[in-house]
Image 1 (tube, one colour):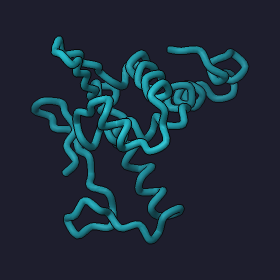
Image 2 (cartoon, helix red, strand yellow):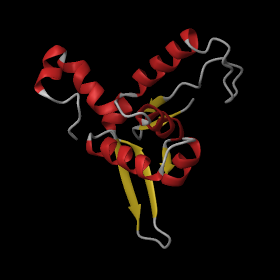
Image 3 (cartoon, helix red, strand yellow):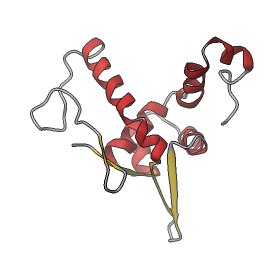
Image 4 (tube, rainbow, N blue to C red):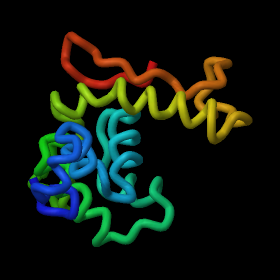
Length: 141
């Protein structure tokens, strides 16, 4: 796991599980990166750049590498010209989907009560991202 201000012994002594979680998802863009990869199953670098308005290429690269290093993302490189790289959730990343869904529901209820889901199905809430047990991939519905 990459070193950061939450990975020293003093921080870990406070609450080990929460400090470890903070060390992994503490980047400004990491929650959104995980959300989009979970929702769309597979994301290319350029797709994430377009979805994450305001992120720099170097920051996205750094946060993707950290999430890959922490075991949340899988990076698949295709030997094509131009090069193509796709990101998907690992088993660990898929296990984090219920946390993302809970965070989304809390945010809707407490921070964005007038939010209307743009993804249809006549629901206010974001589509559920459920793990497809047959192939261990995330599905938005």
